[in-house]
Structure formats: structure tokens, C-alpha cells
Image (cartoon, rainbow, N blue to C red; front, top):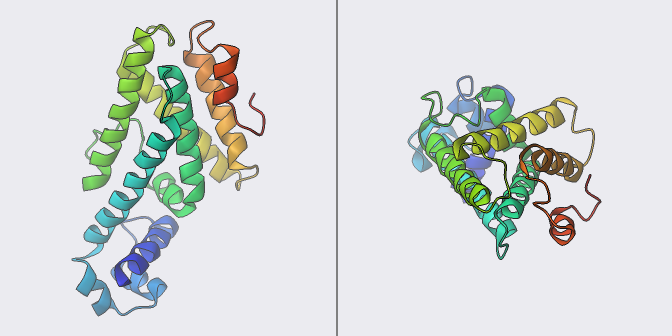
Length: 210
């Protein structure tokens, strides 16, 4: 019970102030528990950070798996994955805010600036996108680029679109952000005719894709 309360409070504080400036006392105050209670449940701020990122990134990856389940086209899976990633971050705005506040490049998860399990989780996510890119290139659905480059472009675009959305004060529905991102990736990466009309409709948002 206390663990989840503390994790939620930490997510809010990390979003407000960043990891370095957040103190355990801040987390305790937001969670409305004592500092002693925090330390009974976690070894410290790093431990809370690890638990938060593990929980959220497990959900992030699971959301992508649900979105792509049963799809056979690698490109369609890649585009649906991008849409699911936008919607996941939109559903967890504090997690999105803390990633933007930290100022890291999401496409370079090998950098040592990333902390512990967060770095490992993003490496896992990049690996998933890279494998989808490999399959899409082999199927002739994506222009010939190195799969790592395709993955980097896709994840960088995700960061750019979401950062712009947050900086705008979330001035439009997240679904529209997802529509724009998917349309951009399709224009940038897909080979001519890679998405027949039926697949394009399946990949598009029910709100109307570009």
C-alpha cells in the first residue's frame, strides 16, 4: 500500500523538480507519509527511481505488445507501436514530464547519463523497434537504412512530437499527436505502396488519420 503511494508521489516530484533536486523529504510530504515510512519501504531515492521506472517501462512495453498483437505487417506494427507509445505517455503525464525535464536523448539509451534500470528499459525498447525495422526492411516495407538508424529516427520523432505537445500546454488531444507522428513516420520511412488501403485504415486513428 505505502510503496505505490510513495512511487506515485515520487513520480510527481521528479516531474516537478527533476531527479537531482528532488529530496526524500519532498516525496514523503507529497505522499503524506513520514520520511521513516519511505525508508521502511525503499532504500532511498535511487531505489524509488528504479521501482518507478521498472513499473512504468513494463507498462510501456506491454502497451506496445497489445497494440501490435496479431498484426503481420512489420511496418504496420512499427506504426501502431508508435501510436501506442504516444498514448501511454499521454496517460502518464508525470512520467512524460520527468523524461522531458531530464533532457536526455531517448534514442541514445546507451549513454551513461541514463540511470540504472531506466537505461536498461530504454535499451530493451530500442531493441524492439530495431527488430521491427529489420523485419520491415526485409519485407520491402521500409526504405533501405540501417535498422539502428530507423529505430533512432522513430524514437527521436516520438520525443520531438511529445516535447512539442507538452511545451504547447497539451493544446490538442493526444490522439491528434499520435496521428501526426504516425503520418510523419509513414512518409519518412515507408516504401512506395508499402501500406495498401486496408492496412492504412487499420493503422489510422478512428478520429481520422492524416
